[in-house]
Image (cartoon, rainbow over all chains, first blue to last red; front, top):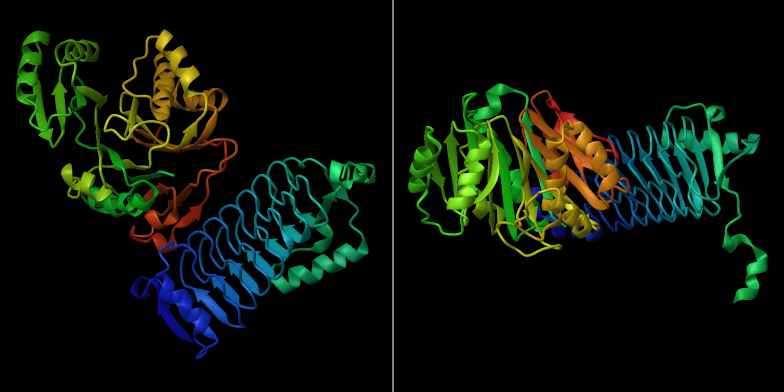
Length: 224
Length: 300
């Protein structure tokens, strides 16, 4: 385990070390002090633990790496992540997992608004609740919420699955409740296990696209 | 952009360090607003028959002592004044309306930027660390402070356009965001008798709350009504006599974070402004929800 002190070496040195230093596969980042863009663009299998609270855009564009934040994170956690795992032990601010294509994001606390906005294949598991407009234009992947969801959940959603155990304040445009079949319970159980989040899959409700918006209507194909 | 910060010390033993604890919070938000900065500090409450006024003037060597002496004779009151850089803190035991009217008539270049029992407001153009030192706030003690670092969007970079803006006795407002209906609202408020020093959108929000409170609303009611009448983006932090309140618009795209320990409560645009507070690593940290009033202390 190699220790990198963010306040001592600065952000560019920190991230370039994680990008280019092949000497270790395990790093601990100390004194994050809410700094932005910590552990962004990682592209190899490695374990990175951030010892404290991180700022905006933490672990963005991640590939292959496992990043754990021991605390709170700011806006845009794991934005555009491709693969790997990002775990937060505290709460996350807005737009966690935005546009992410793959991998797993686990937020043990609450996530704020727009969690999983435009997600494109990532799995996001939130131990607590999510804020308004979560899953907005979600295209693929799974958003799992063990607590409650705020206003306009899954607005303009495409093919992603949203699972919520608690209450949903309101569904967004073209988002509807879907049947929770055996295959969904099985898939959700596996995902919860992978995320190491304890919850009973059968207690969740599933939400997805009603496919009634303009772009789902074949009759509109002639417009182009 | 813009950065806003607030700190309320629950642990009274920390209060002598208020200014020292608050400085890195404000300075950390420099990158969000380097053109002006301002703070409101709640300290040294005056006696029940007195009111404390925060005054400012563009001339650094303005004759504040003469103002105080003339006020004392004109209003037949006891009056004292302390100059702090471009500002001065006036304490007088005359009715507030009389003092305001007298200053307006006799010292039209003086801006009355705040009043109350313990509130003092200091704001200037410049980098946050420079503004902070000009007003000698590092050694200040008190119960709570709110502050603002400004990147001007809606009006000129001037001292008058800097935050905080007063909204009533011991009440003031800092704002991150931009209001879209402030011109129309300003016209309506002017018809109701409110006066404006700038073209600033936040001054309109402050005047709006001033009017609501003057009409008898509690601060909580004024904030609830603001959700209906103010259009635009905002995260507000409102300083009150006993604490502060935080309110975000329904979209809530302007950042905000709250943190609390047994010793203090803090709000900031970004967590990094809170990171230097003692015990922040173990604080309870969360993002405030939209359209929800968070308050510490009493909301009168």
